Length: 199
Image 1 (cartoon, rainbow, N blue to C red):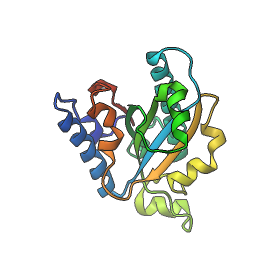
Image 2: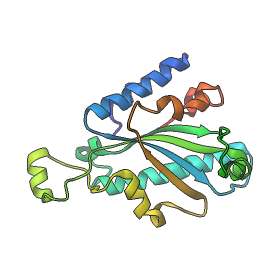
Image 3: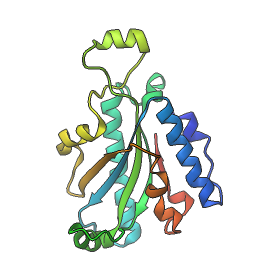
Image 4: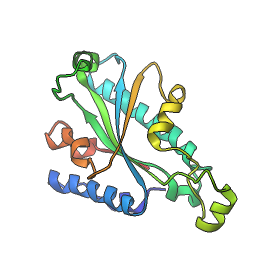
């Protein structure tokens, strides 16, 4: 079941309204105690044209979201766990000149195409307190006991494949990163329908 805050957002013709709408989703979840992270997905070379590359990348991000969901909720399709499902908001992107050594590789592989996401995950469980006690006090809780960055670092073998090369996770300390994550939409490279939401 889709999170009600995500469900209510409709795509508008005005790009500023669209980006602002996603920023509000992020802000509201942060107010509820959810942890926001910026995730950059980098891929090995994918054969085919741009549409084929984009489809493969979307499928890989979907796979990552599915795996992460299983690490957070005990029964990912159950109604009574749906409020804890992680949220991904993002779209495909092209590199920006940053004078980094990685730039040459990023431009060559898949013509620089990659995928950016803002992730929202519920607070991790308290490792100092038994889960049964946490359930009695707060109800169902996330099964994660680590921040998202450390979770991905410790579980790379689960997430990375011959296609998905790297997952960079950066905790969002200030703002929402919605504008930066959706900059390809802002610049007109992708349409509103190109913005993906996983929940």
